[in-house]
Length: 229
Image 1 (cartoon, rainbow, N blue to C red):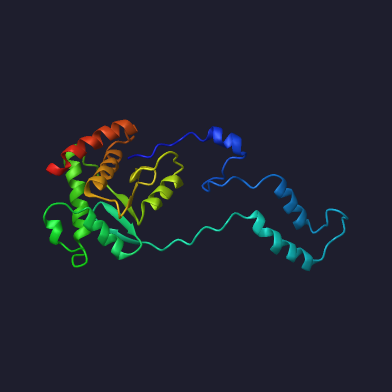
Image 2: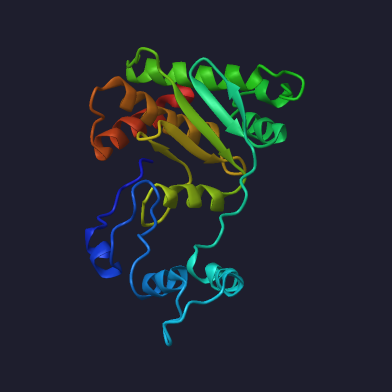
């Protein structure tokens, strides 16, 4: 499912200054900024007398946490697994194995072991991509996209919100802006990944990607016939 952008203009008018570029965080303005400048000036606001360096350092240490935004949690380092068409990002190799099992289909997936066959994920993903291209009769040159494996649906929702999207988060989504598919390894299936790859193929095939509704029609057509391939 393609993410649907919501209008932010009315929200920004209510909240004050617009976000700073690429940060999503509004510029630090207002009364707090004036107080902070007073501290940095090295003057006491009531008497106008200059305060000592030690007192200034203590004031900075005391009040600085009140003005700075909370620190972001540390991000786990990710690994990358390359296929012909996709770059799959994951945290631990067991996440890649779970993903590989869950997108498997047919009897062969019952006895194939991703731990023993490191090429299995590549084989399965590329097979799905080529099946979709054949079904849609779309073969984009130099097709490349990313797949990010999240461990929970909550993490997919967080990624969806990070794109600036409102409303109910889909179970998985493709972002044409980042050319990336976000999925949760505990809910992914071959049909879900095929649907999102269809969006990646459609968006790459056209110079200007079709509207979301038209893409859904094509992706749903693919859904109906994917099992036949």
